Image (cartoon, rainbow, N blue to C red; front, top):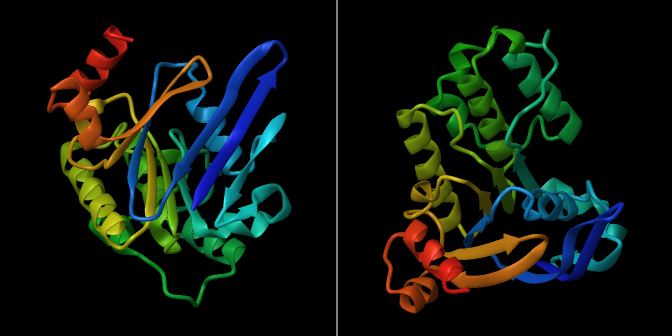
Length: 235
């Protein structure tokens, strides 16, 4: 579904992506992990078309994304920190996004709006919201338009335990529908029950892309955090 072929990106002398190639298919929940500055965010922004690669290319369902911007309609993106107009209410934000996407009357996925009880907070202005509630709005918007691909950047950061479990259950449900889900997280324990594959990046390079089963078999570790640590110690 998404294929990156020899993708490189520099910001001045900084090499953010160094000849990265990977394939992400439908029905997979893939963890994109690595230390700060490893290139994760640049890769995500490249997939979203927010960063233009210096070399290489990315395809979405076989089409080069630089020639077909409409592919973005099929992606739901949850940023690590959502930036919203302070004076708008939650209700206005939702309506504005429906207008922008021109999907006001189409079949929407409002599960998270209801489960997070955002429908009871529609008159609340964005500037008054706690960080956790902003995260809930970001999550609800990512899933709202039934996208084929979900890209979730630190999705559980700032969420209380109940909200975090609601979101994780929703992610599993969408994966079972055959959607492709990419998740970045520094909290590896959050990913144990979710992900089917691991992409590990460091200093702009792809270090490995493995299934969870292969990673556990290679390391002899059941927990994801210990398996990753074992790989990097022995690298």
